[in-house]
Length: 314
Image 1 (spheres, rainbow, N blue to C red):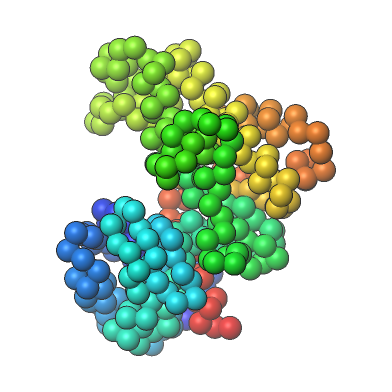
Image 2 (spheres, one colour; image 1 turned 45 degrees about the horizontal axis):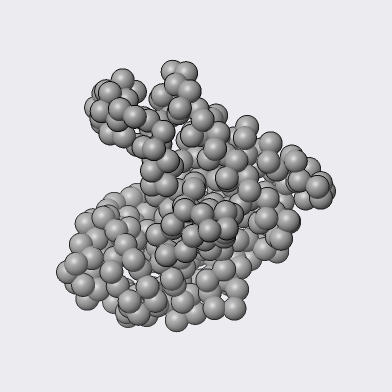
């Protein structure tokens, strides 16, 4: 039995086919082209799923969708997706009617959390907090071996936990959010304030085939011993530790999984993050929690496929 996983991004939509053990059989992608509207997108998505059904036939039993934004998992509706510019778009139901396959839909960070639970941790921890550290910060919760939604399906907005009262402005409109300090956009905003000659910095530290002022460039600079870059990453670790400390105290997870592009700089932010966690007054949840960094860029799409299978095979 196989499942299709779909990860809807602002630029591309990715589809994968995996088996129950999480083994990838195939993957493909197409341009999301959100500006053409949901109807056009659904038509193209349905055609892509039909193509996979032609290849795999009755082995395919389910579809799982992960989408960035506010998702109603019970109705399969994308209530608001800032990166797509869509509001109140039903996706799961129409896709079920187009393909004849049962479809489960979640926020993309929830699907990444499920992927971490199934693939990274092999279900060895029943209480898991997963944070996706990218342009922004998403998170998902596995509590008691089940994906936790909360009262309205919006549980896990860890990126908007306030860590600095009256602090930096976040993309959500609030001030002092974790995302406003530890998302890649926020990290590079602080780097711009600290690094005086950006062009020279990029020329010296950026990858030759991608000369950009980004977190990769900042990580390369830290590796080379640049004090400003190392300071920015240490600050990032401290802020991340502040956010995680509150979450760990509240949720008492057995494992925290960090993933996403920013997590690749672990060498430079992890010591400061662990220092904050180690300094907490209530010790027990911090001495027992496992911190894991995942380099799997496909946790979201694979998690979506496995979650779809989980729901369909109950």
